[in-house]
Length: 174
Image (cartoon, rainbow, N blue to C red):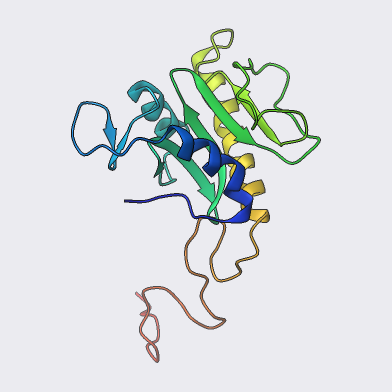
């Protein structure tokens, strides 16, 4: 089971998710051992908006994280929570969703958005939300003090190391 790491930067979100988390092994709405608190269509939408990112099942709520720091949360039936650097806020054409206190309280850095953006054409909605999610992931990664992993959570290689190449071998010249 993949959970969001228990880090100080994640504490307010984890506190909120723990309160509503229900362990569950079987059923139609189970997500990695927890009762799913997000509509399956919204889980699919999150995966579509950030296809390269692993979704962390955190107390039954899908979360995207940069360097283990929560950046995006898919909540309920129609809410994406995104974490942005203060005083930034989502761009004007993006439709907000209902607030999610205490995360979306002023000064917390979390913003609630509609994941479907009904007023925008589908392609434009997807483009703007995908860009905002990438921005949120980059910002979340900047909050980490862990230099042993990159912003996507992959181990950082020491200088001179390469992936997939044996030491002492020269690349072939075809």
